Length: 194
Image 1 (cartoon, one colour):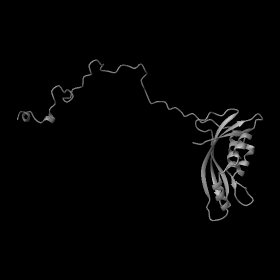
Image 2 (cartoon, helix red, strand yellow; image 1 turned 120 degrees about the vertical axis):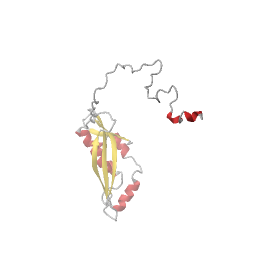
Image 3 (cartoon, rainbow, N blue to C red; image 1 turned 180 degrees about the horizontal axis):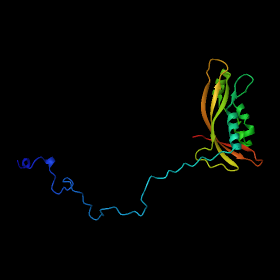
Image 4 (tube, rainbow, N blue to C red; image 1 turned 30 degrees about the horizontal axis):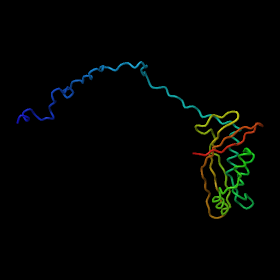
């Protein structure tokens, strides 16, 4: 009966509970009531936006040799009288690559066997449409003797026999173009795309 006379518990603040009675909390013992100055200047307005750094430009000569290499390496003609094998496209890259890279890309391999079989059946031509060319993200800026290039392209397969429809595939190649002693820019390395 004594508890009922005092009223419901939820309406009563325990003794010593200043917050429940509407009083401001006291700062903990030993700490200041206001924050200490940090010594740093205060903010007086919105932050000044920082413009993004422009991507380094790829000069015309290394850009063109990168395009020429990608176009030659990825174009095929599976019609009678056209290419004899998938690797013929890599043989056409000779003017655009170093001798060392040419030896690597034209070495015997089984790459492209499946596509080549399909293209022969369709008597297809395979063309390349360049989508974008530039310095890849995170690559060093081009110099007078070396430039990294990323070529984004669309490979378009056009059947000339059978019932197959035109198909396109987007792809990209990243490569290193270097300037030799004679001043000619050549693709010297192919880099893995991630």
